[in-house]
Length: 293
Ligand SMILES: [Zn+2]
Image 1 (cartoon, helix red, strand yellow):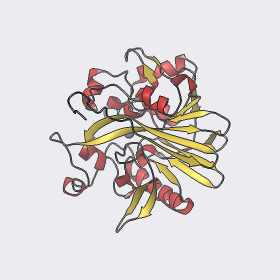
Image 2 (image 1 turned 90 degrees about the vertical axis):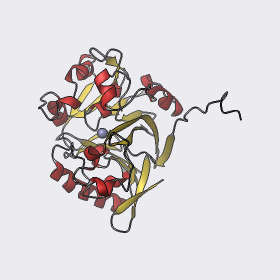
Image 3 (image 1 turned 45 degrees about the horizontal axis):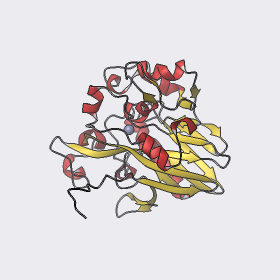
């Protein structure tokens, strides 16, 4: 093939797995980059750069991986919303992105339009998880998923509206107001079943109101713990991102969740991993490791 006349479009990556009577489809909403030290916390660069190679600005490759849960009775639940396109120049610089979001194409690859999403469960409200909720002008956006109920922990909603010097850069209360205006906000506290077989559980750690999602059907379990396990390396317990507001809580909950996943042989969704989106735990030489499903 003549490379000059037929440039290969970067193919959209998707990954799917059945979980009992549910289907889970994952797609890459965006590729972005973030400071390596931010991602790996107390782990020294001389150790983490053997695992991932940073660019000349010390940033490592990341993705916003999104998951669509299709229920046996035809409901569609999106887990997190990625970065989207309603971004300011500051946002684009911060996340090192200069292309359009794959959101519409990714959903289409799973057979869906934004209008067909019934629920969106937000792990938390940081820009790289919540901004895909919005369309249009970032100063006064509309909802990208007009029919979806947006599920957020009360503690996370409160945190996003009471920012401090350490957290203000990653929350946009003015954008979040669009959810309330549309009457599509569902606040929950702690562990709660959202639909039969789909349960949210507050983990804390990364943020006080950070939540995970468990899908259980016919003895099979899929879990999505978002920024508790942002990459496959973060199943190593000391790998806790420096942005976590309560890192000791992350460490504690991580041990509990890993024990649970091992016991139940759970399938795990990873929100920022670049090699795959869905995997399961295996024992490595020193630490737990992850293999793609
Ligand atoms: Zn994140």
